[in-house]
Image (cartoon, rainbow over all chains, first blue to last red; front, side, top):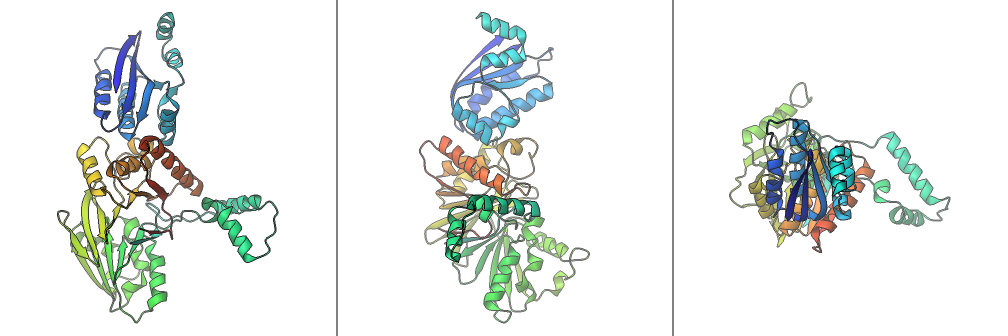
Length: 125
Length: 320
């Protein structure tokens, strides 16, 4: 599993590539965890997970997503995922995660919905 | 080894509603498209080959009760409402005059797993012996049955039963030899505690793991489950919820998920994964959809590994 993070205005855009299963779920959690801290500053950044490079995910990875979603909900900020590959989208549907997480077809769609400022910066390159 | 499912539903027995029966009839008639059936065999063939399982049969509504064969005496897992129908069969087979011996392995003592006993005729017949095995202490197991058969719950009190009833606590750290089976237990995560069982006989392995909430963040629990399931021919697993339900609104309700069962069984090298303890709110179509989705999930995450997946149903029989 590989990851990268970009701060775009008030959105933390976290890209995940590769596989998230029982062997890599801990590493996935370590990537997400620092972004879930409540630093006391307001407003906390929104989180958009770009899963366009994610090719494989099991329940171990879905659990990490749910921890993140619960933490963000408790802090009153948005968390969403974007750009699911077809197999990953199927896994979200089968596990009913499509009903409890906000999913956008593309990163652009996600940014546009979460933050007009972030969307503008993204479009500007 | 033969496995016969007398009850597969979770939490509470359910019956098909009049509305659902009507809908099933309507679906069957639509599929018949006005055709005429010359013989009873033609009709049976149409039912078996054209009408989907969820319409012609369904998954049933009795709570947990499973029979294992062979054995000189009877071997059963849990005493849910399905036990009533098993009792009817043994009474028809043996009548009241031929004493029998029964070995019951109890996952735990929650109501849906014991509610069949008052309706199991052999307990009222002197000469029969009922062995009740579990991981819980005998006084705790007996108290649950006594409470169930006392005022105001049931009119025939525990002390009026005719059969000899023997409670035995089985330790989790060794193998037990009972009625031809080698049996091990494992602790599970469930309110009040529950136990999974691993039965081995003639080189075949069956695991019964119901009423267990698998905490994905608990690596030790995951490794223990995989070790317990290792290379089993058949795993009967608590697949009551979707994963999203299990980790959100139904967290800590004591049950697991269809996809968690796939992940554990694939890693353990299980040959056949059977989903069990069906959510009572689910109708036959919903359960059938879950079966198809679970198979698809296994196809995606299995990456070429082959594992048979079934949804258990009342009266299902599996030969291992």
